[in-house]
Length: 152
Image 1 (cartoon, rainbow, N blue to C red):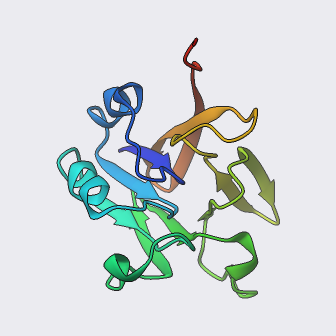
Image 2: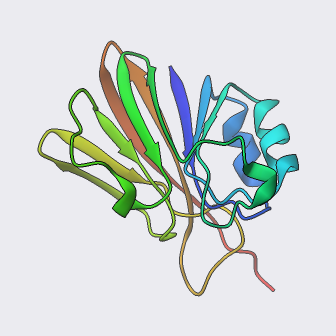
Image 3: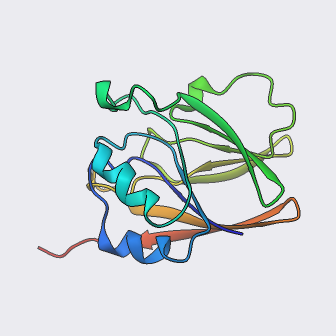
């Protein structure tokens, strides 16, 4: 199962990102979507699992603050802010979070922690990134995708 993992789109869904979404069987979004139209567009590509970010206001009242989903035999916990991850992660294989706009992929205590960074508007000099993952039979592999910056 191919899974696109992204976060912090902040109202911008780049064409370079949608190219990857076309191959996805599912999309995980770590919040700060900023507009319902982005949610609607993401849902056109694949089933969407999304959490609410700190910039997702009243329009996002029905979007949960945390979500647990199993895809390809891998159990994911989604939150926007890393500080909102609960202390008990029993049964969780992968934690997906956003907020910082900084890419992270590391394993701690048998759990894979993923922050896909931001693929929305560029912030400071940070990379524009997302992840493509392959989950099958409880195993996961993750690839970092870097979107080139626009040249003015």
